[in-house]
Every structure is written in C-alpha cells, then in structure tokens.
Length: 300
Ligand code: TA6
Image (cartoon, rainbow, N blue to C red; front, side, top):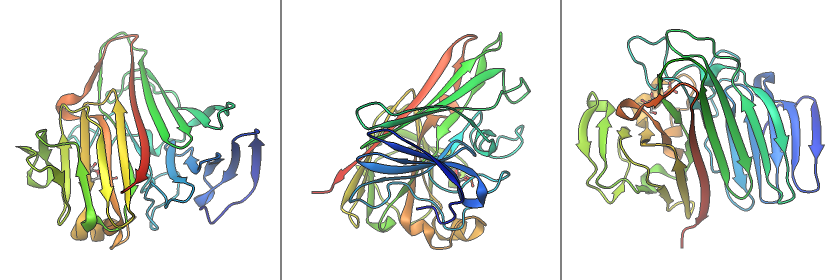
C-alpha cells in the first residue's frame, strides 16, 4: 500500500509479520501482515491508516491528498480525537491534540493465533487548562477483524472531564449506494443546522448531501451496507455513548486542502466516542476504555 518505503526492520513470528519502516513523509510507520489481513499504523497520531482483509478491498479510506508531516493530522484511517471533540471556543484547534502527536510504540505481541497486537503511548500529558495529568494508551489488534482501544488513566487528584472519539473513515464503493443502520430512534445533534436536536426516524441513513450528526446516548453496533462493493461493515463498540456520522459532500470536500474534490463519493465516517453531553467524567485514579471492533462480511 505504501509508495515510499525507505529502510525497514522486520520482526517475523511463525504467524504474523511486523515491519518498522519510514512511511509517507518519512514518518515512522509499522506494517503488519497476518494470515488474514494487512494493516499500517503511523506513530504520528497512533493512526491506523490501512486495514485490508485478503480478497477484499481496503476497509479504511485514506485520502490521496492527505498530508504526512509532523504538524498536520493524517486525513483518513482512524484519527484519535482527544481530549476534546470539534472546536470549542475555549480550545486551541479542532479535535484535540492526540492526532498530531508522535506516540511511542511500547510493545508488539504476536501470539500463536496469528494476530498482532501493538500497544502505544501518548507522550506524557503535562497538566494544563486543556488536559489533566493523565496516561493515555492505545491498543490495536490486527487479525480477521481490527480492534482498537483507547485507555485514559486520570493521574490527577481531581475529576477529569474530556471527550474522546475514534474518528473512523470507511472506504465505500459509491456513497449513494450506501446505507447506515443501527441508529433509528436515537437523538442527534445536526451540525449543519447549528447542532439542532432531532430524532432519527429512518431505518437506514442514506447520503445525498452533507451529513454531520452526533448521535447521543447510543451504545448500539452500527452497520454500513455497501451495495457497490457487496460488503457489510460492522462497527461494534464498548465504553462509547456517542456515534458520529459524517460525509462532507461536494462543497466541504472542495474546501478541505487535504482531501480530493470527489473523494466524498468513496468514504463515510462512522465514529465511536463520547462527545457533547456524553463526555467522560473520570474520577481520580480511574481509567476509561473506549473500544471498537471492525469486521466485515459479504452482502448476500
Ligand atoms: O466528525 C465530524 C467532524 O467533526 C466534521 O464536522 C468535520 O469537521 C470532520 O469532523 C473533520 O474534521 P477535521 O478537523 O479532521 O477536518
């Protein structure tokens, strides 16, 4: 998948293979091969940018126009949003800082079952107005599914309020032939109309314009039914009460410098987190866990 491989160090077990190399923009990247699948993770943002099962197209979307540098977030894959979502007036920048930090790779394990697990850590979060003293880890397991877990431990002596979100970009064949199910009856905040409050009445969400909705108080699994690729992607989650559904459509696509004008046709974000009224309030000494499991099957 990655065009600009430089030097690489491989760690091969009888089951999975893990290669450390310089990826795009010469950013450190880990390439993973298992008996079922291949994946790529950049230390920049601890961002999974690629997951593909054998005999299937990639499950994750990565923009051809994404920037790969130490300053900007990568456009695609699974950006980690922490410790705030969106652009609150009192916060510096959109979607927190975790996605633009260079994370440390702490551990790589490849047990006999053929899966590969990486544990990464966010460099120390010094206490500031935007973030309490905390430890943040991310555990990614690649097998015939992809699981990712964000763990935040409150190391301060006070309650720590924050938002988190795994902002997953899924690859689809044609957005107009996609349906998203699992959110009927759920209340949502509609970003394009100033976060007005609504209740989802449709059995399935369809896409014919910009969609940017924060679904609240829902722990339900969501499915993406893709008629063009004849595939159903299933998003299961734990420790998450919000689901965000996003497609920028034409005008917003054109306005984003790191996103192709027509790329809105081939992706949909279904994001799992705790945002707005669902933000996390973590007592001192406690740990919160936000976990997703991504799987796919053929559309019969
Ligand atoms: O998750 C949806 C959203 O909040 C949209 O409003 C849109 O801004 C998107 O995230 C992408 O944000 P970014 O900062 O990555 O351009």
